[in-house]
Image 1 (cartoon, helix red, strand yellow):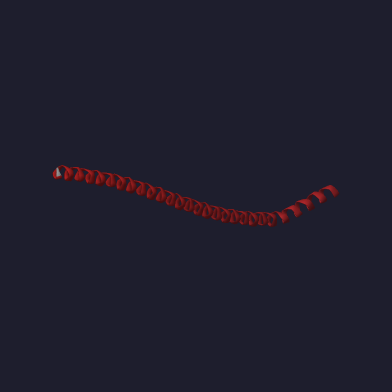
Image 2: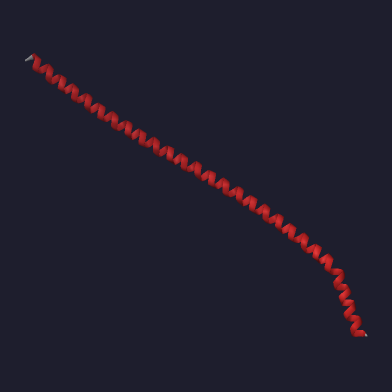
Length: 101
């Protein structure tokens, strides 16, 4: 009788141990899932920051390049005006003299 009671008690304890092991395994799996989700969210934020930084840098470089090109174009226009100004004056004088003459 005593032996049967000890066997049943051992079976009950074994069942409790198995239930605790299942519960611990489920908890560990849930914790691991939460950690993966948190790590994934953190990685996504880091990726977005990197993209935003790259876009900002590219925008700044593009604006600097546009400003440089605009300055170069303005300088070129001034050179052309200076080069053609004397020719225009000479052409106007030639036309006026022709019309007078």
